[in-house]
Length: 135
Image (cartoon, rainbow, N blue to C red; front, side):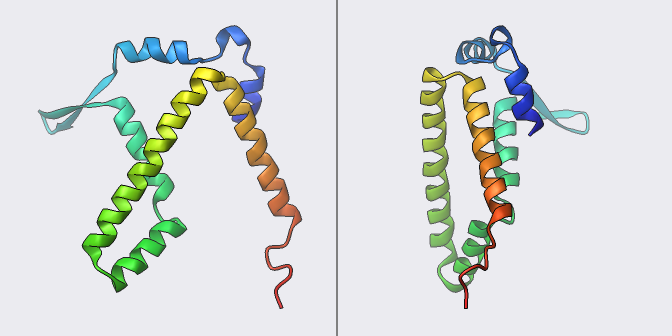
């Protein structure tokens, strides 16, 4: 909720649009992974953020638990390959769709709409009993 309020309070001049993101992308930020005094490799900060966000979002969710059960019953290599392909396709579509939306609508608008929809889902979850209708 605070991020929605902050986004609403941001003036149009201070909002982050695709143009600002393009300027930032011209000089990619990199980060060195170090082991002791040795630098192992240079990794994009965007890559690290995307990996961390996806890893933490997926860790322990229902689809991961279902994948664990499927791998226990079926061919683990097939499940791993199917999981990687499915997640890659889903994430790729999200990235392409997000890029397309960002070209048409400001990031501020997307954040506000997403926040309002999230709040609506939270309110409906509080109002309705998930066990309603079960016998």
